[in-house]
Image (cartoon, helix red, strand yellow):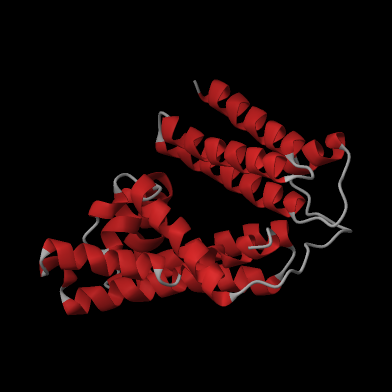
Length: 242
């Protein structure tokens, strides 16, 4: 089963690389294949396999995004090697395109709201902690909980453990972004998003958000997850010209 999922993931990645090219239709096809690859980890039979496939899907998304932003087109074979390889991209740099803040914020919030819907019925999360811990990418969440949060919590430092888990997540996402986009600013922006989420979890515990009326608590969660989303997905949208 795992081998079949890995093959499917790699096939989608290669197809996305081949789809990259001039024209809106080809760019749309590449993006659709990346989205399809992001659903493969949900089919994994265990947490470890899910984590591995999720990382592969994330790397695919980052590298295809980088290809979409190149100034000059690469041959098909080189595009496929880039998407399937682990080496950072050298040479061409992502296009720097101006984009208006209102359009950027609207687009990134739309993506974040989409995450709320797709992440195990994320719109029903009544706290930020519930969204990240129980409804979004549970395989990674459980791993961070077991190996980062739990050891510090057992030592009597649950708040430190919680923030450490979000910082660990921030560092992983920042590293992947730095490899794919080649920009320190983009990596720091993405890291900041996850640090903000960790701080929001600490704040909502003091506010007692869990005890709020369900509609209000869900609105709080949606606002906190989607509001700062330009930090998290803005760098990728910028390379695509949004």
